[in-house]
Image (cartoon, rainbow, N blue to C red):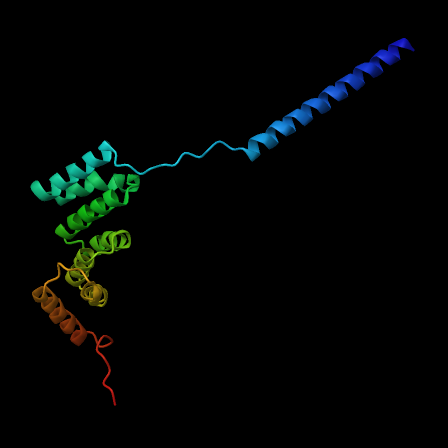
Length: 183
């Protein structure tokens, strides 16, 4: 009978130990869930590597007059830009490189994204001119009108008049863009 009591005491001790370990583990897990470590805030900072890529692409496009090389340098790294100012510069370079090669649809795609990031009068007119050059008069008209509606003080009356003339020409060309006569 003494051998049975030692086995019983051993099993009871083992079960109490297992229960204590389970309770402690549950408590530690609950403590960690209730107090998670702080999430680091990532501040988008321009890295030197991305700045070098922008400089190389700008050099290839503006100085060397090699738009394909600018595209080859910048395109693989476009998703790496987290700073909106750097991304805007990258999109501008890519759009100008595509436009230099006559790829107006690709340039327009980059500029559409640029306008979402930086909706400025300069970006509206650039996108309108690219659509216009590519023959997409409907979208060109939309961005010419946005340009004219902007309150940018750098838009002179001469520029405004020239853009309005182009808007009038496009409206005369597109049947759906002309205002219907009033009865």
